[in-house]
Length: 529
Image 1: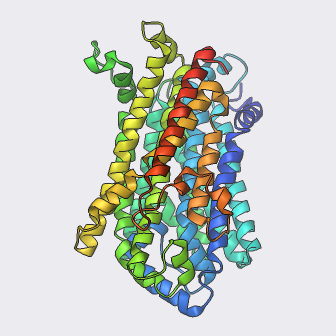
Image 2: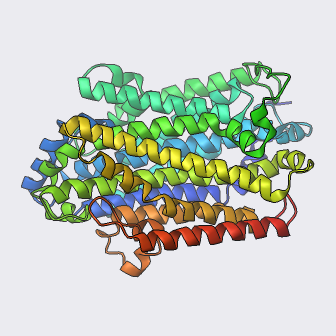
């Protein structure tokens, strides 16, 4: 029997399973990138504004780390790509990582691959189908990005080159994830390996771009950003990620033949024969299962805060001659430029924290679907205690991540500016968003309680909050629509004064949603709806 027999059927199965996930991923990535690119078009309309922007970011290590090599910044297209590079590259890479692991290692861990292999299905068919689906999705994203930038009035050659680069990046990290899925027998570990490779790639690219060394050429991210759309427009660097993807795909196929179904190449270390006292409670169990992800979320957000916070000292130079961009920051001039900048970056970082909150709440659904919740509830633990135990860890983790974010931004600002006067302000401004994050977490919990299959809608809401917060003014979104976002209602400190009434209302809304979550879980069977 051919090892690829049944690949077509598996492709159709994965497309069926991803009928919601794929459109959400593609729509969110393309929508946010295009909305950001559209907003930039009128901001740098004169050569003087573009020259001021280029002079500022070209000498800023923080800007280069976040956005890539400063190329063609004397053109609107070059500035546009410098602004959207982070969103496009990270979004496409994460989509490839999560979907590839979902259709390979996660399916094996759940035991479904073994059931399918009991029929007429080749050994390599699931892996091949996953790569076809995720690779196709990456190509669709690249094509839509290229056509969208072209439709915005940017040159066709540079737009399509950028889209091709993002497609190649997605294909490469699909192959990286396929190899990671062969190494370990747990989906979370495979995700960790693939995301670590993405982080290492971004770090090597950043090091090479800042120092002008060869480190960039050891990074898939560096390869795709070396095409320089709207500048030199080099197509040949795309051969590197394609060759890397081909080699990694062959490697994944060979590794698949060297292990049993459900097992990984690296054997799992046996745990202690006796459970610790921490595992005797639901919160302890939840914390044990999330401690690694919580640690890496905290590290990532703290580093992100350090990078963005260090850029605050340069924001006056960038914005003082550009009133449109200053208005986007919610400021008019002077010291308001700096406080407006910090208000904006804190909002963006807090939205990232909300991503952890939502994913942590969704672990409740995973506990049900994988059967672990039934084992816990078969003891004397009531449903409410099980639910509150997980949500308590989610809440504590959210507070920890907000603090890690605040400390990163505040420390960077203190080091760069030489003054710690804003330290307390920045920490307070970050924690002020806690009720807004709690509303999003409460919505995720309420959907889990009543209709867990609709839990993905929370990501749509969160994406809408991001667009409103980042581009609401430039896109002229009506105030009534913007105020639907709890993050928009929260005062953007330190530029705006604290409004305790809004905080109290958002807190009450979050509590009401948690009550709905409890009532919903009581009315349905575990693992149903």
